[in-house]
Amino acid sequence: MENRRFFLIALIGVVLFFTYQAWQQDYGPQAQPAVSTGAAPATATVADVDVPVATPGQTPAIAPTPDAGLGTAPESRIIVDTDLVTAEISTEGGELRRLALKDYSVTKKNPDEKFALLDDRDGHYFVLQSGLAGTTAQLITHKTRYTATQTEYHMAAGQDQLDVVLSYTDPSGYSARKIYRFTRGSYKIDLIHELDNSSAADIVASPYARLVRTNYQAGGEPRFASTFTGVGFYEQKEGGDGYRYKKTKLDKLNKDAYEANQTGGWIAMLQHYFVAAILPPPDQTASYTAKPTQGQAYMAQYVGQTQTIAAGTQVSFDTPLYLGPKLQDGLDDIVPGFELTLDYGILTPISEPLFWLLSHLHGWTGNWGFAIILLTLLVKVMMYKLSEAQYRSMAKMKKFAPKIQELKERFGDDRERMQKAMMELYKKEGFNPLAGCWPLLVQFPVFISLYWVLLESVELRQASFIFWLNDLTSPDPYYVLPVLFGVSMFIQQKLSGQQVADPTQQKIMQLMPIMLTAFFTFFQSGLVLYWFVSNLIGIAQQWIITRRLESADAAKAAVKR
Image 1 (cartoon, rainbow, N blue to C red):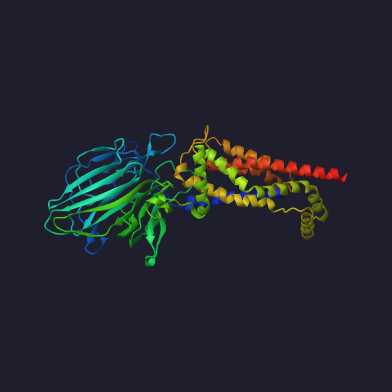
Image 2 (image 1 turned 180 degrees about the horizontal axis):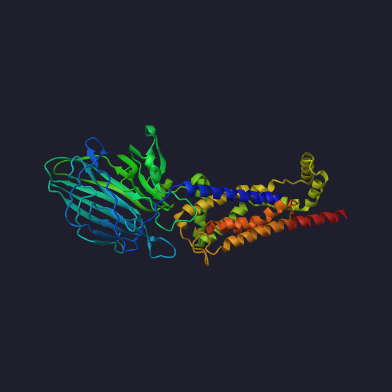
């Protein structure tokens, strides 16, 4: 009875978990499939969205304006190579069209194919557009034709910063420079617009930057799991009393588009493991917009505070960006609230300290798999008293199984008298039949929290363990761990030694290890490793405690004789 309750809770928990996952797959965001032509990579295009126009004394509104500074020269790409990224910047508009992360491959099987956070190839479209909105149509936009003195930039050894400079001179008498400043060891990029007003009239201008993308999967996504792709916005609360974080899936922007004017905050495009964010100065007034655009694309836009550039003067606009992984060590140092882009869901209070502990264990072992094993040991040590009560209860249930069967035969269908006799037996023998449920009820939130840690923590992305287990965030490709888990569960059942009288219940108990083994073939191998090691420790505890009880009973019997 005790063992049956224990495994039924486990089975119900797993079934509910997979029911939720199936619901997410059916009714969660549906990504558009990437289009591959099978030919060499080609540049994709998306219809342009409206260009913001600045009005003196207020944050610019969104309104259409003619393209500015269009030339006849064809688009060319500037290649940028730093210690962390390889980027492609177009001379048309100075758009950042591609950003590949050197430390992250798309799949474990192809380590040389680096993950492109921004991309415009093979049916993908995710780019950064920027410019200066003004009171006239002659300011620079994402359609302005720039010139550059170099076609390639390489960060040299020992070089801390790399500036990529694009220039534009307008016939009306002003000139502009767009500078991308890359910093060694950082995924932050400074986007700088410099405007030199050599004309005879004042110019009112405002910086803008926007992330425009279609809803696609970049590759290497986990199977049987729903991940978030959408917009994150650090929104100022009503009355200006602090900020709150909100996020919206891309396909929900069709009905949940939003626009806000506020001081501070930031806006970002989020996806599994990675984030692209626009991080304007926190003391400036800005306008933020998230909405669908033409071409089945979505936009997250920032339009900054207006400034007046007097004739004969120049001004510089700085818009910091973050384009990279959600690395937990340092997210909160980038801008206030940025750590919220990493979302473990409702179990965040458990998942965050769990990752903290796991990362420290990884620091000692150098291997995430061994870190998970040590984590399992620590969890079992912390729950030792509960586990001890569980196994003592199971051992006593095994010992008094004949008496319980005798009560069933004596009282037959009289359930009331049967329950009363059972309670008297429990009280007389001094054990609690529910004690065995507590360890599982306590451990299950840890199990689900570890699932989210493995799913959301980029630090564990494609993490190897040993032998064939070269990705702890993906299911075991050969199903070895799930089978070992099933065997360990079967051994636990045998050690409990409890017999179930009802034939139907007997079949359920016999099938339960097989059913859970089948379920666990869909889980990340790191999660199955955790539960398998937990079972092994439980088997050892159960064997030791059972032997101690048997020795104590034998000693009592010897004294009586």
